Image (cartoon, rainbow, N blue to C red; front, side, top):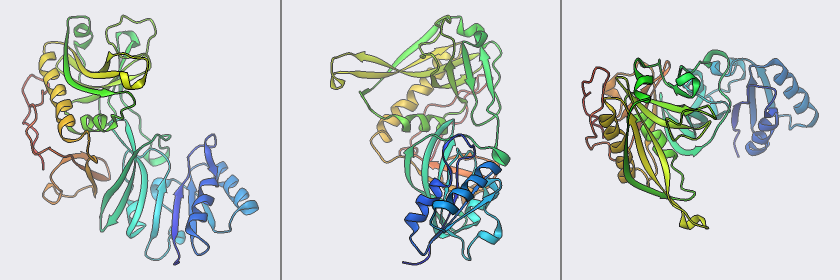
Length: 354
């Protein structure tokens, strides 16, 4: 077996399990006697602890450095040709250029990618300047410190009973929204149902990457006005219009003693003058997911360097970050969906993809 080289960005806090070199030693075991692991952390305490523990009980094949993981490993620790694999163990909102540049051609990069506030652990394979996703799974990690740290814009409504989270951008205008929330509610059942234990994470990600005006609506007050049916300390996918809002929840429609007897349906609730239009838009998204995505393998996903011209990107739903352009190619996105509702009441162009 040839030499295999792995960097590992261990958790960036001294309070979490896995700090202190444990993850790095597991990787050293996987790489075998000819491999080595480079691990880094922004916290000097963690790095000191890692060095002490690996020296006392380790394989002798782990090197720890202190630094911001977003900057990659120091050049002196990067093997010729790059690392065979890299693992990032904090939530990633953007793909640091160093992670790709320090990776060998064909090497794997595993990281928790956060889009719309939803995190998925994804394995990428490097092909030139492009990273191609190979596997997805649900996960959750701490958020980045250092260069990649970022604050999530939030807007409190109704005295803090509700909160809008704009995970991927600046807050949209919310003037008149509280008045709309106190007014009539528009409700539509989508007809899309699911049984007990069904995983619907692909619907969350589908909505976050395809819906203009996407945000998350959360409920935070135990004794609120009951404006929404969102459970306390939970949130729901939502879209905004002019002084209007629609959100998506699943409602239990069949009860029973056993899980097999229980069933839920996706329902859209909306407020404001544009509520009916936003409802149609959100319901159309659920129906498209049910038709094209629900039982499939999810999207094809590629990550390209920032500045890549549109003409060189595959057709799909593009999420732009500071250092990267992330392209989701969802099944069925060649079908025209319900036109998006923009602020000002003018429909945006319908979405068209592969």
